[in-house]
Length: 196
Image (tube, rainbow, N blue to C red; front, side, top):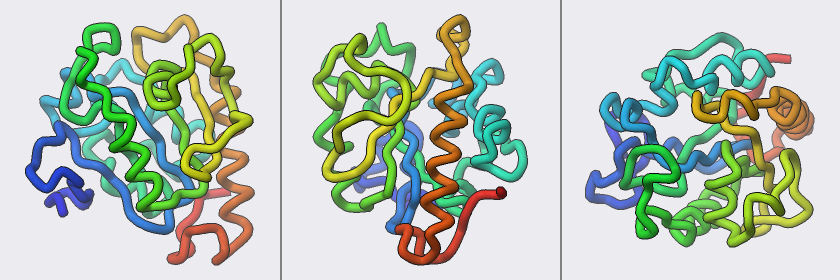
């Protein structure tokens, strides 16, 4: 267990930013790799130009705007975090081929069994699913990942600013709220949920 609340599944502290995973989560958001700023701060989406935390708040996935350093709080809202590339940082295009660990991600999905896995960029989804980005529309996908519902979202990175759309994020938040409204059977045994 990392001292910030997330298990480091490598057991050797080699993740640049620890996972935030536990059983019973409704949603796990999967990034590509930490930015250099995030790796340096050991916090998810720490670049002040990244819209991730603002987007979570704007669509109602969090009840207030969280700071990047507060990422360990997300399980209180039924949300977890991880990346496809846990040991490298930088922009997607600069990551070496060995950075991607899709089988490791699949093992986490099998272990923790969230209700929904949502990729926060097409590149992360592509590297995990083995599909070209052009074959991955935004929103809910028609297939599952290890039996779990899959979504692909527009990146909140400043590099993707011109392509960002809030609509798929809002649709995901609506879906998560609907799953959490199902009560104890929603895969969230502690009853943690979203603010309506």
